[in-house]
Image (cartoon, rainbow, N blue to C red; front, side, top):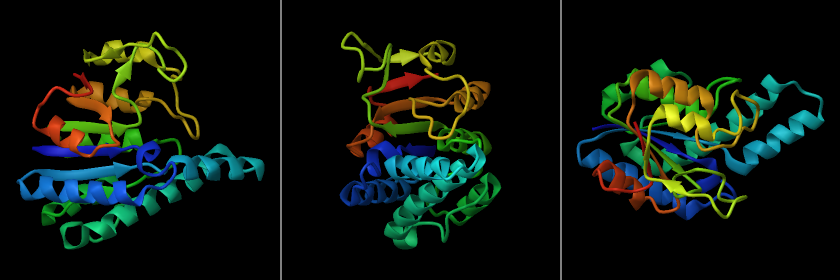
Length: 224
């Protein structure tokens, strides 16, 4: 299987969780040794959003705010990559093409953000399209996709399966802005829908959930 794992910063970096980051390193190595082609894209979490706020208060424009967040996400990616040791690609890719090329060495590729105006969700979607991924898994701070934000609405209901057309009905925001935080950003969905990439959104606080999704077990929300 060709897998793209999108690890939410809300899971491993809000605040930083060294044990969980290490757990994801173990998972990525396990999947690689089982013969899967493995890539991961990580977010910057609360520190990235804090840096966006600092940049904003300094009067910097939104692209510069994004640049600050991208730097944090790449730092998280670097930590994970270092933990992978010899199983990981040598450095954090700075483009989709560089990431695809790094896979040729049979290593685990880990990356963060790429450029202003593009979330790490969109990066993961672009990577999935570029490497012809069989599955994209988003490990997030929710059990899956809900009819409403479960943190705000007690009547929110988790959905087990839905289509990309259905997914857009649950968006809070329809376009990118610095620090956007929702289950999948709109641009990522447009990319994934274009190729009909099989996607699972699940609770990322237990890396074993990702392993279950790879094994096609029923977990989280399946989008296709």
